[in-house]
Image (cartoon, rainbow, N blue to C red):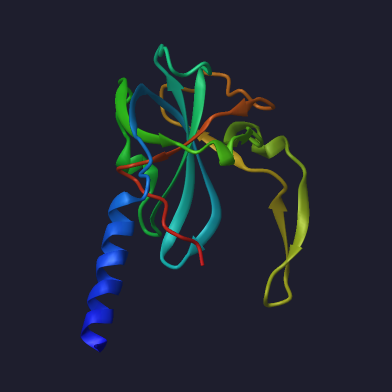
Length: 164
């Protein structure tokens, strides 16, 4: 009797997993303009965002999109995307993370105010009060759309690791 119940449970779980809606991915062409590192290194993963200037598309009304992804802590996005040419990205849309692009560029960071933060050892450190976006070489002339809501995507090829 137990084996029958176990078989039914596994069958139900398998069918449920196969029937669950999977996010549809789309291929978007564009050029990575800037990266930002956020949330620090958790569980062996660094959490990043990149701003992509989209090549003309019928489906995307914004000139820029934001893609969130994670990489192992010892890996930087420069090693992932050093090309300056138009690239194709396999992405799926995440409307629930659409947000206003905040922060400033690394170049203007020296002019940004800092705020004190107490670390775990009790020392007071000065930290920036915003996200900083780093331009890829050759894209410094592009003005990032700060203050505008950017459509949010996740990458099929650079998945977002769960932050525990």
